[in-house]
Image 1 (cartoon, rainbow, N blue to C red):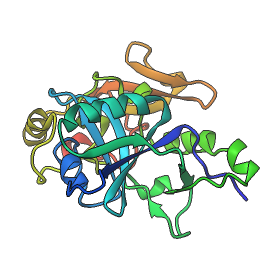
Image 2 (spheres, helix red, strand yellow):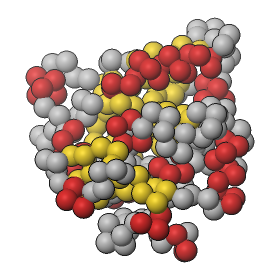
Image 3 (cartoon, helix red, strand yellow):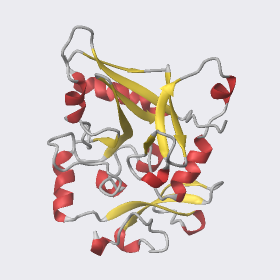
Amino acid sequence: MTASRLFDRAVIRLSPREGSQEDVADFLQGLVTADVRKLPTWAGLLTPQGKALFDFIVWPSGHDLLIDCEADVAPALIKRLSMYRLRRAIDIARDDSLAVHWRPHLGDGAAPDPRLPALGERWIAAIDQTDPAEQETGADAEWRAHRLRMGVTEGRAELGDGETLWLECNAVELNGVSFTKGCYVGQENTARMNWRQKVNRRLIVVPFARSDEKRRRTAYEDLGFAVDHLRVEAIDPAVRPAWLPPEEEA
């Protein structure tokens, strides 16, 4: 069987405490950029200025919500969400019984990636502790190469840690923001940028050989790609992904 597990991803579970009537979706809805009433969805948790701190995919799970995020930043994301929880009876913890899976094609019954169907399909499933292959073999390298070929950026190494405005992460084009759901952290500046069409820079996947070191966010020399933070007028049409329309048509 082809490996599908993404070991670089972790699952965080948000759940109402036993006996409480807490609405976990209502809690997250007031924090993140996307509408968590329409799942799965790609979302960001931003600074008050509208800059990306974390990005992740939110999944439904009964009365709970599951967050599919970078494994390395899961503790920091849990801490951040817990800071906003205040006195609400909601548990926020990593669920190590679950794993994130991905395939490059559609049609096997899982959900298309909410950002872009061409990214393939992904799902969350219980870890099979009796299958040694599932514990040893992952699809992380294949996923990264496929994602970069599609021109899609994600994660702290590419989006930065409070450095990049959410709309500069191509959030509109990749379905990562709702302008109708109401307030969330960083909403005011994000909405203002959208209304005024003030996205002056974007994260763009470029061939490594053509990367501008001064504008480079990160590089994958083994794959021949880099992620640059470019002014829109400096984006070469040859490297602009098909899903990102020219600015004058946006």
